[in-house]
Length: 257
Image (cartoon, rainbow, N blue to C red; front, side, top):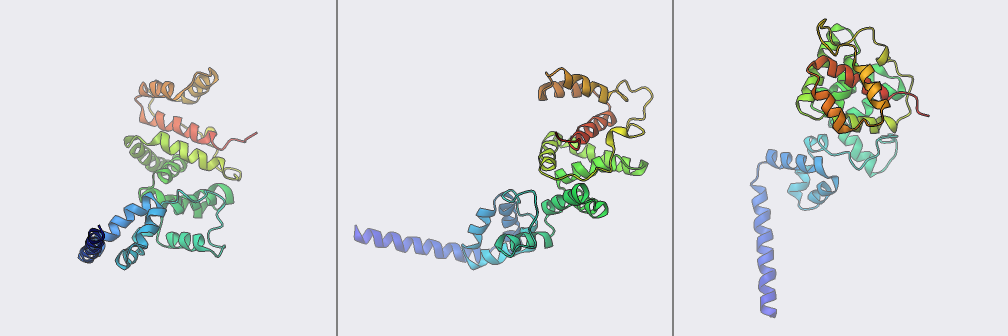
């Protein structure tokens, strides 16, 4: 039995040695890409990876990995990220410097809706949106659709790309959770008082009726996700659907009592 134990230990050491040698032959770009995926799912797993060996630690320190690191375990607000001297602060600062889209989105939300720093906030939201961050794209499209004619057109395109990927409801839910955790400055976007609707068709049967239908259905108290889906499937006008989504978005910013 003792001899068998010695043999097993030797086999384990040989396996570990061969695995280590195999790692050294993997391209650095491949390791960085893999660890970027790991970081996007779990910071805990990323930390374990970095402790495995020197090759892993080196690859895991690449900016690409920090750019894709998940912020799931960090509070949305407040953001004392860059003033506190501890490991979390250093990690988040590195993520920010590497262009982490979740941080751009969160900072943009705080700047635009809490601090009144509209230009800075819009730029951070634009950065997140244009680089594929779904919630950033949702909020940025909503803001654009309240702008001038060219901005409305761009906002509609962004909104339609989200609708095509069927993630509108998930984005709305996550953005709403964020908004509810924020202190809101007076919102410059009077969404429900827009002078015109996004739908310009004179023959569209739902043009201008989205707010009325929303209020009517909500007041009946049977309004559910399945009811909403059934109602929205009956609407063929993409611009009217965008008008409806703007109504829901604006509701997030109404006074809370």
